[in-house]
Length: 156
Image (tube, rainbow, N blue to C red; front, top):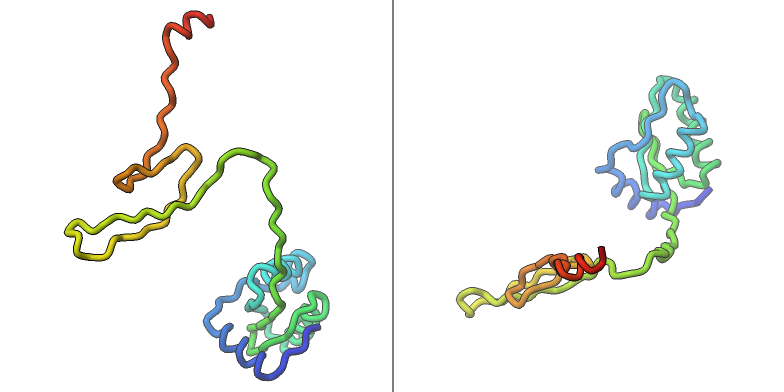
């Protein structure tokens, strides 16, 4: 289980104030699927709220401690039926795709103002492999080449 200093815990409580619960634990209790969902939410967000339905305070405390122990998360706050958990996000290593060819590319388009006295407008656009930017700053898609009717007749 991760240990937090009081200052870190206070900062995480403040950050969690505006969050909505992402996982709800119902009458079935803490099942394997619920634990898996909490783990994936912690990986994605780092700081989450969990709502526990049920009136037994001791059961909620036991659930809170079990989640923190099994998922190596830090307990941040327990108010009523809301539990706040923290675990640092795991950095996912992105692998390069195996397909080759041109992909999306980012292009900066600078257009002068119509009057010429104001600042030019700057926009960043993602272009697909078959798109290009015209001299006027517009994005155009490349047209498919028309096949020659004579060549088509020869190939048949």
